[in-house]
Image (cartoon, rainbow, N blue to C red; front, side):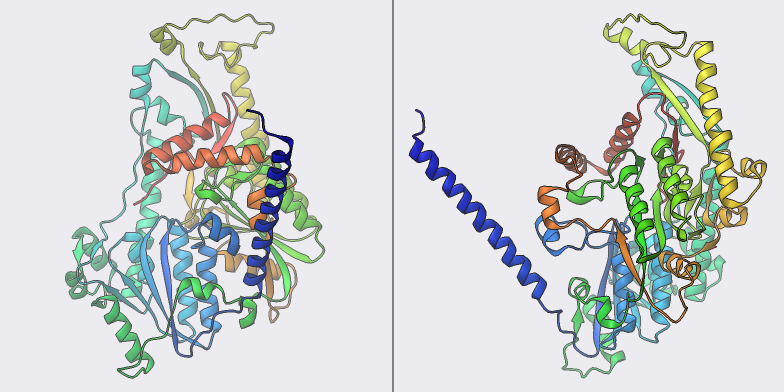
Length: 600
C-alpha cells in the first residue's frame, strides 16, 4: 500500500525534528563537558596508576569519542604524562603502580622504568603492586621503591623465549611454491614460506637479540633489587615463584593484599589509623591538565606518531578496536603541515613499525628530508623501528632509541606464490596470451623464467644498492660499504645499533623532545609544548568523517578489524600478516622485519 503524501511530509518533518534534537543534545553534552571543572584532588593523595594492556604510544583522549566508541585511553604517552604531572603536583604525595599483564614491548618497559626513576627523584614514594606477573611486568615493577604481590599471587619470571613459525609443510600439502628473492644473509622473511626450520642467519640474529635483552633484563633487575646477576639468573632458572617464596628470596618486599599495601602507604604518609586514604584513579587524574601544573607550556614542538605496518593511503589510529597502520598519505601530510607551520620549532617523529612496502616508506623518507630543510627532525624509536621503519627514520637530524628497541633490518625481499600444484589439485586450468618478453612475470601458475628472474633480481638489487644503502649512508654520514657490512637485513637491538652508528643515543620520547629543543635553539630554562600532528579526531569526525576521508573505506576497514579482533591472538597475527602481504600484491618489494618477533 503506497504511503500518502501527507504521511510522507509528517515523516520527513518528524525525522528532521528528531535529528535536530539529537544534535542539540550532543551540543549540550559537549558544552557541559567543556565547562566541567577539573576534579578536586585532596592534599596528601595517592595516585593509583594502572599499567596494563597493549599500551599503544598514543590514543585519542577526546571525551565524547571515548565515551561513544571506547578507544584505549591507557596509552604509554598518557601513562608517562600522569607520572610527570604527579611529580609536579604538590597534592600528590605518592604513586601506586597497579601492574597487570601488558602487551608492550621491552623498549616501552624501559621507558616506563625511566619515567618511574624520574618521578622517584622528587623524593615521593612509589610502590608497585601485582596480583600475578611475568618477566616484563616484574621488570617494570623493579623500578619502584617497593614491590608487593598478593599472597595468592605468583611470579612467572621464567626467562625469555622467541618462537619462529614456518609454513612450508602446509604449503607443500596444498601444492603451493614460493618464488622469492632476498638481499642480505639475514633478510629471511620469505623463509617462513620456503623452509621448515631456521636458517643460520635467522638463528644467529634471534640468539643475539635474546642475549642482549636477557642480559639487560638481568642486569637492571640485579641493580634495582641490590642482588648479583648470578642471583637473578638463579631466580629465573627456578621460577615460577609464589609470593611467599619471592619475598623470602628478596625478589619482592612483601606478600600483601591491596588494602594492606594501601595501609603501608598511609603509615608512610602520616595518615591517622582511622583516616581514609585519598586515592586518585588514573581516569580522574587524566582530567588534570598539564598546563594547570606548569607543564607542557612554551615553544611548540610537533609530535607525529607512526605506529604499525607501513602502507599507502591513510593511517589507522586503532579506533574501533582496529590495528594501527602507518599510511604514507597521513604521515607525509602531517610532516608537511608541521614543516610549514611557523609556530612549530621542531618535529619529533615517533616510530613503532616493523616496516612495510618500500614505496610509501620512500614517500615518508622524502617528507622527512624536506622537513629538515626548515627545522630539526628527531626520530624517537620505541619497541620496533626496523626495515621500512628504519627507512623512514634514517634521514633525520638525530635518532633516539631505547637499548632494547628492535631496529636495523636494512634489506629487501620480494616473492610470488606459484599456485600450479594447487590449481592442478582442485582442477583449475589457465592459459595466458601475452605481448612482451616479461609480460607474464607475475603469473600465479609459473615460476620465473630466466629472463624474468634477472629482471626481478635487478629490481631488488637496484633498490637495496642504489637507494636503501646510499640513503642510510648519507643520513648517518657513513661510508656505503660500511653500511652494507652491517646491513644485510640484520636486526639489532638499540644497544648494538648505537655501537654500529645506526642510532645516536638512548632515551624515550622525553629525551627526543629534549634533543629537538636543543637543535631548535630553545633556551634550556624554557618549557616546550608538544602538539600532536595530525590533530586527534574529534567525536564528530568519528561520526561524519573528515573532508578528505573516504568514509566507505574507513567503515569497511573498521568492520574488518572488528571481525579480526574477535579471533584468538595467534589467529589475529596470522590473518593480519596475510592481509598485509595481500595488500602489497605479488612482486612488490617489501622492507619489513624478517620475522614476527614475540619475546615472552
